[in-house]
View (tube, rainbow, N blue to C red):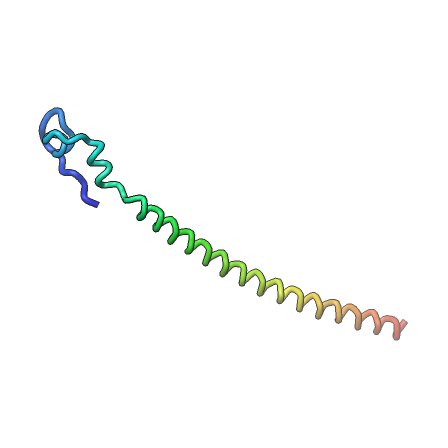
Amino acid sequence: MDRPVRNKVPNSKYADEAQGAKSKSVIQSTSPSPGASVLGRLVMLKKKFEDLMKELKIQRSEDEQDRELRKALNERVRRLEENEKRLG
């Protein structure tokens, strides 16, 4: 972004003010347009959405692994109980 050049005129901070322009117009000319702000926000939200989707996929994968491990553990417990009944 272009910033105004400081002027050495005593009662003026910026060169535009020394020429009679108001500082408000300088601020407006350097601020991003509303469309650019919205576009930047959309890009940021899209990235956050993609990150959350990746995290959700990882979590679902981990949940599936947990279910498989629980099934295997329950099967081992069942076999152990059957073996104890046969021996006992």
